[in-house]
Image (tube, rainbow, N blue to C red):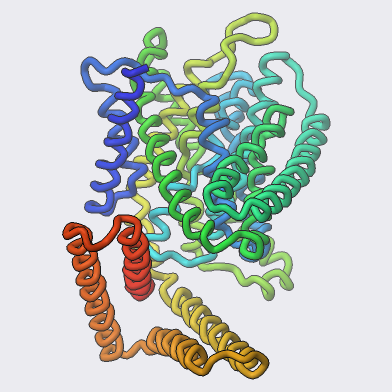
Length: 536
């Protein structure tokens, strides 16, 4: 027990250190974490670390999918639903079939076994590509499509994986029955996800306590995921449906205090989960070495290289025709949604990075079939899956910034972001005007003291002036705003120093100091948030 806790503390320290290096170097942290995991795994004296598949599929995957769905805009998701489905369902199925055909034709594997491998390596992991794409300010629509694909592709792959494993184990497969089951899973999970989202929002509204509400929010993804998963589904679609439902309806039902604390909690929670997951990915290197001792390394390496190439090329083969052919064949579609420049489908095709779900699925393959015979090619499947994850995550992930710059997409979303920023400022201005009008009505209808009205009007004028300052983009004005924020931070620091001095001198109680400190922290966070918005 103690040894396990010591290992966990060591891994958390590694996550923090690598995240710091990523900030300093500009390299995506998932790539550095995987490399660190490999180095730890091959270090002398380190015991083998075998990742428990259920840890990933039942504990890690639900909250990651849920918070991604929460952060997804339902309006943008709905507008881009067709390209998202083409990637999350169509591309996953196409890649699975392509891998199965390639392993059968080139390597002599049975089609069913190749289908198992194809289902394992078909779903991309969007975490690393999205981190790079956001940092390089790519167009918003590309980000939405990649994020939407990342929400649903695991569901398609896991369902295909279960069908394929069952076909290999039992020896029979019915395409019609599989199609009916897949449709039933989608409909049932969407319905269950909406029910969970509706129920949890109502429960949270009744509680009205941030700690209880955040606890319920932590339970929510598991409640959405586990029942469908245990009944033979994927659980992913239900979790996505729950997240999208809460994302759209939550602002009306979740309190401000809960939102403020919840943002910090989920940001920190996901930081730890994703960091440990990528570190665990690299740590599988030693377990991998022990599994392939009885196999020809050259044959396995050749097989892995073939599958990696098929996985990468299949995404290009699928995306480019389906981006342009429908618009050439259907003119109304081209008028409603014009064809993007070639750089867009190219970069979407290039972001097919695989991740921890592929490794977990490979580890979860049963040791024996229903007839009691060893599951065919089990160790080879795990080796190839690990190889594909390493090739796509490390090589493709490392090359992504260079590819984005060469295709001219770096900072291509800057103008788009400026337009969105202007839209946001107009909304802020309209909201302040509405609240000012409401204040005038309240003043006329109620006997509000003049002193209170003057204070409230001054507050509204201050908020209005802040919005006007944000709208002014002239260099002189920006320098004035920067100077204003610098002075504001100095004043906050002076207040904080005085409060701490009074506490040390015994002139202020700890409880009062904490209240004042919280107010100063919120003021400082507001200033830093304004500064970050200007950089954005």
